[in-house]
Length: 112
Image 1 (cartoon, rainbow, N blue to C red):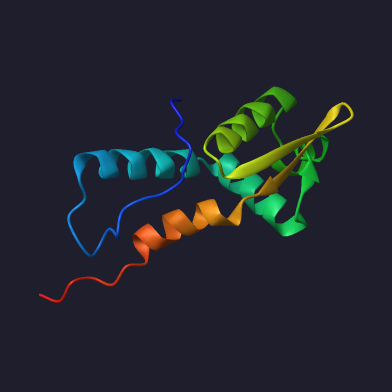
Image 2 (spheres, one colour):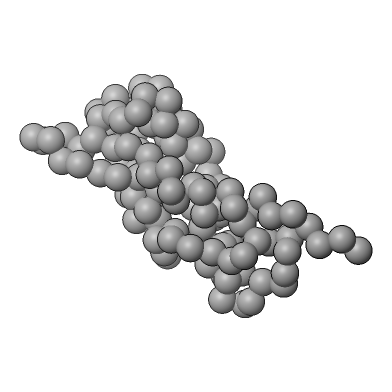
C-alpha cells in the first residue's frame, strides 16, 4: 500500500469542491483507516495511551507479522508514534493527525 503521511487537508469536504490532488490525498488517508484490523489497533492503542506491539496479537487475534504490517502502515501514515524500548516497539496515537481527517468531514455544508 502506498502510504502518505497525513498532515493537512482541505478546507472541508462539504464547504467547497476538492481539487484532484486534495481528493487523492484524503482518499489515501481514509484507505489507511478503512481496514478493520487497523481500526481495532488504533482503538486499543488509544484506549491504553500507549502499548507494546507484543501486547497486540492476542486482543486482535492476528499473527505478529500481520500486526507488524498494520502498525507499519499506521505509523507511515503518521497516525501512530513508534518508540523502540529495548527489543520492543511501543506505539501511541498522534491525535493531531486524526484532527485532519475529522476536520475534513466536520465542515458545515454550504446552504443551497
